[in-house]
Structure formats: C-alpha cells, structure tokens
Image (cartoon, rainbow over all chains, first blue to last red; front, side):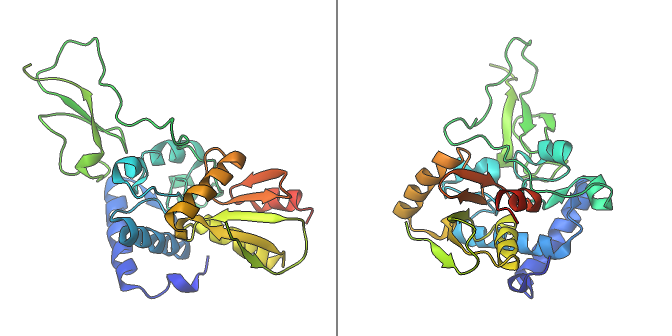
Length: 173
Length: 93
C-alpha cells in the first residue's frame, strides 16, 4: 500500500534493514509489501518514542513495560498466528506461503487475551526430576535452553533475553 | 469523548475506534474514504489518560478484547478488524 507519511525516514530505513537481516537469519519472512512494512515500522518507531519500547503498532499499549511485554514486537502471539493464519496480527511477519503469494493476506482475529485474563510468566513445570541446570523458554519462539540464566538474545528468533521465562527449575537447591 | 467527523454519504451512525499507528486502521479509513462514507472516529492511542480510559471502557462493551479497528454501527453491532467483504455486507454497499 502507498502511504505518504511512511516515506523518507532515515530511521525507518535503518530499522527496516535490520529487521530484514534479523528475519532472514532466524527463518522468518517479512510482508513482501514494502509500503505496508514501512508504515508498520513508522508505527513501531512512534511507540518507541512514546513508551521507550517497540510495542505492537496495531494494539493499544498501556505504557507499562511489564504489562506490554507480550506485545513488544515480535510479540508472544506471532508464531501461533503465523501457523494458523499465515501472518502475525499486524501482518508485518508472514508465512512462507503468504510471502510467495500462494496464500492471500487478511486481517485476523486478535489472539491476545483481554486485560485481566492475560498470563504473565507460566508456572514452571512440576513433577520432573530436578535437572542440573534451570531450563529457560523463549516466549516468542519456544526455544528452550538449560543454563544458569537466559541468554542475552534468543539465538533462534533474536528476541531479547527479558522475553525468556523459567520453564523448569534446576541446579543445586 | 469527542470523535472526529468525516463528511460523506449517510450509511447510519458509524463510530470507528482506531490507533494512529495501526496500518489496518488506516486501511479501514482509506476504504471508507474511497466509498465516500461519512463516519466518526477516534485514535485511542493519542488521547489523554483519563479520556483514554473512558474510551477503552466504552469500546470494551462492544469488543471485550479492545482490538482495533472496531466499527460500531448504529449503536447496534460492532465490526472488528478490517475486511472489505464484511464491511460491504454490513453497510449494504
């Protein structure tokens, strides 16, 4: 789509470049409609200026990072939406089929639960023999790793370390 | 809460809840403009805290998930998301 306001921002150019590299390296696909993607990036940058983090441009952020953690792009719902609908809620990320044009793109139903019934971090799994290291789970892509703390960046989807939750307690104690 | 009015053909009382940063919301406004339909809208993310909270409460009655865009038609029903076919059907276009 064409959008005048989405043209000509150097900041958006850089953001897009980085996003393209990160997506390619981690096996995700951006929407092939560059105008659409640029408009979303402008929205993300507006939210970075507003809130201090890249809250989803298609959702209303609260401005409290701990409450918005699940909708910091890429959101916790992206992978499930890619699997079911072929795109994330915004359609910034799309499935391979949509990227290749063999599946149409559509506005999808919101997967994020309403306020009040949102989960924060899941309770760690119980009933398993305590492993030698705690196991951490990336809430964005589901990647699991057994180590003392979460990595700085998810090696799979490149989400920030703060997006990890404790999946299985472990280590001495 | 005050909404911004956009002039156009009368297709009933249309109250559109949007976000200024949302591309689907922009497509919704673009579609209504293309069809030359009159409506009222509010960009909820640009409101001041108190007005924002009131507007969210109001929208929640129509759409518990408070997702955008949400179009309340004649104070009777709410169309959630942007889908041309659904809109054409709802507004008899």
